[in-house]
Amino acid sequence: MADFRTTQKDTARRRFLSTALAVTGATGAVAVAVPFMRSWPSARARAAGAPVEVALGAIAPGQQVLVTWRQKPVWVLRRTPDMLQRLRSGELESRLLDPDSQADQQPEYAENPVRSVRPDIFVVVAICTHLGCIPNFRPEVGETPFDPRWPGGYFCPCHGSKFDFAGRVFKGVPAPLNLVVPPYRYTQRDTVIIGENPTI
Ligand code: FES
Image (cartoon, rainbow, N blue to C red; front, top):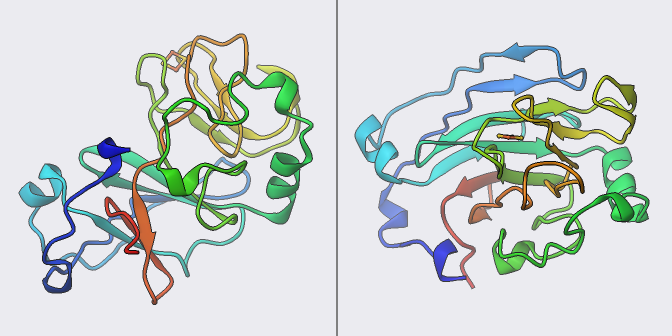
């Protein structure tokens, strides 16, 4: 788990940046720019790896925001009860390559069926584990051009890899691994800080 450990010095002195870039609605069809106050650290510091704070209050069930952390896109999705029910039902397991997430693609505190600390909030790096494209958020359920029994999740348009709402990869697609869950922790203010592990 050493890869997920990041320096947590001076956190009380830092003012982090909320860098939500877009919100995708439940239809998956609309991306809306969401402005956030920006102050410190600088763009150079952010690019170098400063943690990113995301306010959860503005994310409705079924929506996700896209932020940038260490020059990587990261989604923060507020899953709906229906999404969670499908993840927990076991109905997808036979279609998934690593349903129990045995590959080291998440911190220890996200090693569970929904791959998250809080069940409703899913934080994941938005980079396909095949060749690095950004998958599309496809929350609809049913027949789609790429899957006759699509349960909702993420579809990579580059070569057709598919992931569920926990970022678990389907069998029979080019991507070899589940999506990566980055280190993150919650604050008292209903925010998540991406790039820092929880304090014990
Ligand atoms: S990069 Fe996603 S399937 Fe190839």
